[in-house]
Image 1 (cartoon, one colour):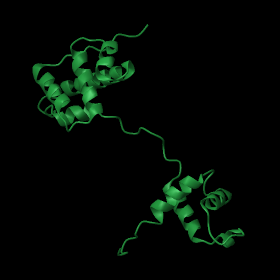
Image 2: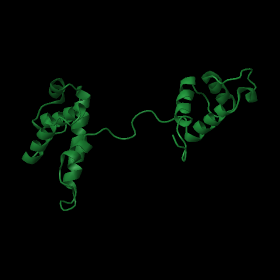
Image 3: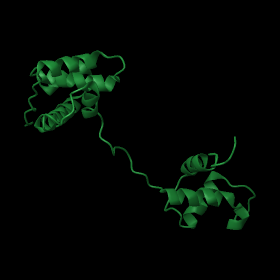
Image 4: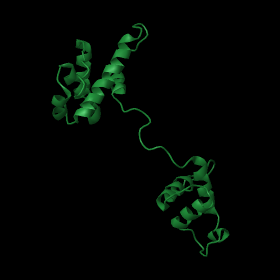
Length: 173
C-alpha cells in the first residue's frame, strides 16, 4: 500500500505568486508543471489526480510535492527577520533539479592532456606502420600505454576537438 501524500497549505500570497509563475511565458514548461503540481496539491488533490492534468507521472508529482514541502518548511522555520522574501526566483530554485545528476566523468583532465599529447607524436614513434593517426589507432595506443583502461574512438575525437582546436592564451585568431 502506498503512503499518504504530504499535505500542502499555501497562504493567499503564496498561492497568488505560484499562479503568477505558472502563467509566465518566460518560465520553462517543466517548471510550470512543477508549480501547477504544487498548486493542485494544495487544493487537496491526490498525485494520481494531478498527474494527468499537468502531463507528469504520479511519481514525479509526488517528488515535486515533497520537494516543495521540505523547502517551504525550512523557509518557514528560519528566522523571519533573516529569511529571504518569497519570490519567483526562490520558488523556481526550490523546484529545480538537484545538482550532481547525470553520469560522472570517467576520463579526468590529466588523461585528456596525455591523449592530446599522444596525438602530437607520430604513429611511427609508437611502433605503428602508418604515417597518420586514426582515431582508432589513438584509442588503442592510449589503452596500450595505460593512459586509460578503455576509450572509444568517438571519445578520442571529442577530447581532441576540445583540446587541440582551442586557441591557446596569447594566440591571435
